[in-house]
Length: 132
Image (cartoon, rainbow, N blue to C red):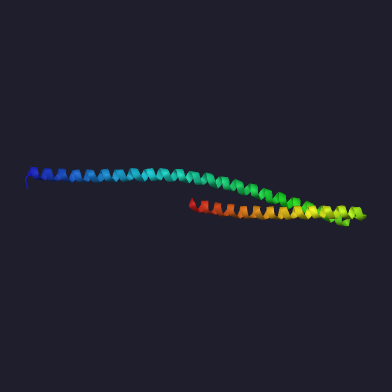
């Protein structure tokens, strides 16, 4: 093999290596782009997680407030039962008891709804934490 043939062969091989390196560089650029995209998506997930944690905290506060109000209503009801009253007073007590029962029913439904929301929020938080 002559020197010129050897040189030509080396240049062909170097050209092939350069082409391979260009392809590798292109693939690395794509990987970097995808990594950047993943970082943006992860940031959005973290924002959503923070928002869900805030919502869960608010829901917990509402549930506690509703439970406290229910305890107050129970105490008022117990106080009403201890009173001795005339027929008119008894009728007023019955009306009050009916209103309290309606409020407790509504609050019970609200507590159930809030509890379901809290469970959903906790499930969303767990899902987002897994996604991290």
